[in-house]
Length: 175
Image (tube, rainbow, N blue to C red; front, side):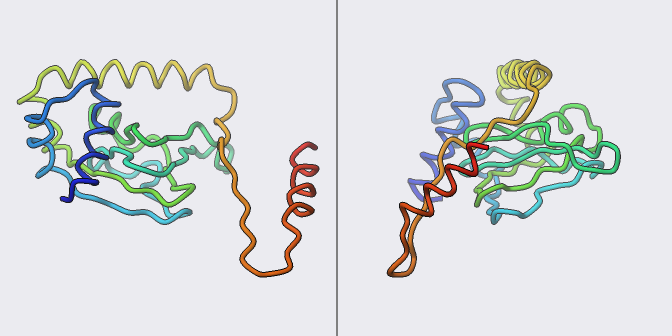
């Protein structure tokens, strides 16, 4: 693992668990596998057996459930958050389908490794419970998923009137 990956992991784990020390990072590193998803790829499907939890190092994911035969978005998972932890803690199948909405890098930890890490660092269980409760409270109050905060347009060929296209998009979004 290079320094940049280690720093990104440390930042993510600190967001999830609060301040973490080097001992914890060193204990976590060998238990994690790095996964890269392209935008549009599915991480797991609603009803799948749990296979561990994921820490979002970069990117963004969207969670949806089937409702009346159609997917309904229930939330988005951003950098510094976890996904799949409820299935790990409960031992139940996945409660939602999770798809990358942009290129995403994740650190995966198996259920067994997660339990071993919590055994060695018991404060993690409390932090994980707090985070899960906070997410459940937030999700029950949310009417619709948060919208992306950043959009960017780039002209890849000469002669494109980016300002005019941007104005047309703004008009459409305004509707």
